Amino acid sequence: MSARPEPPSPALLAIETSCDETAAAVVRRDGTVVGSVVASQAAAHAPHGGVVPELAARMHLERLAAVVDEALAATPQGWAGLDGVAVTRGPGLVGCLLVGTAYAQAAAAARRLPIVGVSHMLGHVWAARIARPDLDPPFVALVVSGGHTDLVHVRSAAEADLLGATRDDAVGEAFDKVARLLGLPYPGGPSIDQAAEGGDPDRFRLPRPLLPDFGFSFSGLKTAVRVLLEREKVAGPFDLETGPLRSDIAAGFQAAAVDTLLTQLEAAIEHTGASRAVVVGGVASNRLLRREAQRRCAGLAEVVIPAPRYCTDNAAMIGVAGWLAVAHRGFDHGPLIVDPGLASYRP
Image (cartoon, rainbow, N blue to C red; front, top):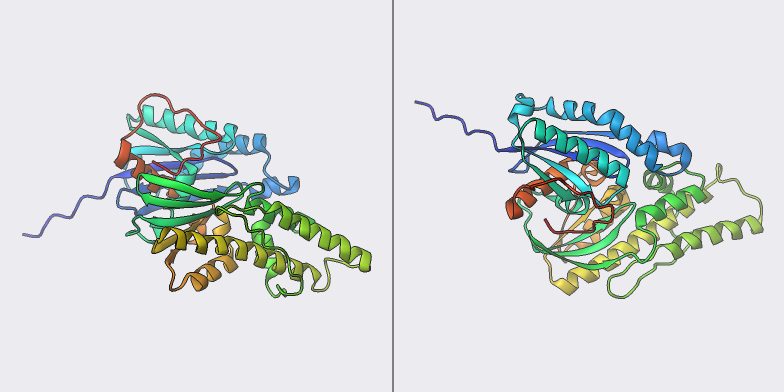
């Protein structure tokens, strides 16, 4: 008699609407991502040079049900195959968070499913487990996005210490602002990455803003690019559309930003004695950062970086973080309260 097949691992529907990505995913307790769908709003916000909160919330309202249906289509049982719902409750734009949590709570109540609210930042950190399912603490996390630049010592699955953070602009915000100075389209991260390709990073030596206590500051680096452009204009007329100037400045800025991030990451690894590090968040999609993190940390610590689609905002990471939260504190009881300023790296 043949053995019965193992039943599938329990699954959560995960929902992410903290900013301008409408996302849903089905994630099993063993970390398997059954289906993951992200509807980007980048084209809608590009004419404004950044995210317009009211527009983002309205687009979530219009898209979320269809995105959930598409994610559920990846599992044969659909809603019947779910064991709970996980949703981002912060940090993020308050209107966007309200759309996601309201939908998640209504859907969970209608189908008698338990629900858990999780931190978007916790999701970014544990997205690394999608790339490396056996990832366990302790490790150091470099969290780099449009709103955060943090170094976190993850001591255990339930305990994490913030080692350092940006004092002003997050690195992703600096990418957006420099892209605007260079006449590149929003979002700035991919635009700078592409423009820097073939550029000379040594033509313009830009500052590396290193602060004590693992801190970051990118406003000065952004200002240095603006001053550089003004100096070039005084030296003589130029056209950013032609010639190597734009590519060289983009390459110089990118090299300075990446060098700053990794110098602090190396210091944090040495300080904590961690043998593993993760690089996560939207800026972790940057090709130079991905390459240099592996090269510079070789022999110092193993570096885990999720695939680019799990670095930018997505719901699969919320599902992984949701299961972590359920394991440590169970599902939530009572209504979820959104927290736009939530900065927790704990379940």
